[in-house]
Length: 251
Ligand SMILES: C[S@@+](CC[C@H](N)C(=O)[O-])C[C@H]1O[C@@H](n2cnc3c(N)ncnc32)[C@H](O)[C@@H]1O
Image (tube, rainbow, N blue to C red; front, side):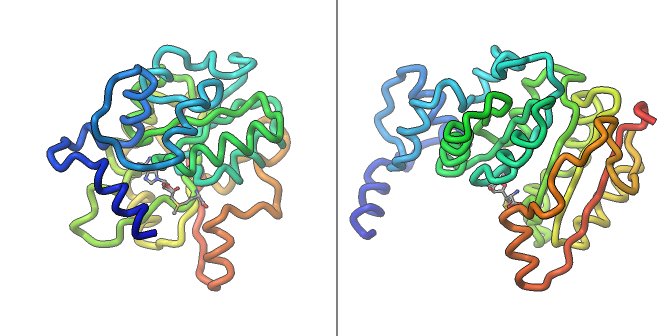
């Protein structure tokens, strides 16, 4: 453990800028065959480099979306903060008529997600690494059917407010990125976050609904499926809040 930490520090450039360390950036540079003098010791970064058919960086997404999927004509649902891919697997397995794009900022999490997709032989799922806000900028307008944000980090302290991604800018972006009929489904354990989002939704082209009632005639996720964090909070008997949000032009 100590050795690993030392190795990690050896490879960190103390003068590196934030951009160099931004989520996904080392992978972009490795895949571009750039010579990198310093990079963090992370076995998953090297595994990520190999997963070219499943794991996309922001520039790759920009060039290839939606052709990253076997059938690019299917509607796309993006799960932000897909963690180790448990829910991506459930979504893609249950909904062969949708393409599922899981997004996360951590190498270990995206690699584990890709391995699960590979093992299950799913052809309607892919993963992107990076900050969801940055990745959304390269997705063409009106090309996402849905966004799932399950237990996004609530960044409870006021001084960390800027890190909460379900902010004004996010809703502005999504009103362009979602197709007609598009939806956002949020789950969280944070009541203040729910209240904040509820207020925000009113300012944009969205409306809060009772459920999703999608035209496809079946729920996106099985009733017994819990996300990893949902399971943790349920075990701790913490309340869980959900928001179903639809684009107004869909109604
Ligand atoms: C609290 S966990 C929830 C994981 C999963 N959705 C669940 O419900 O079990 C939040 C996840 O979001 C990821 N994350 C945090 N900020 C992100 C961002 N800006 N863009 C993409 N993913 C992010 C984290 O790495 C982490 O996997």
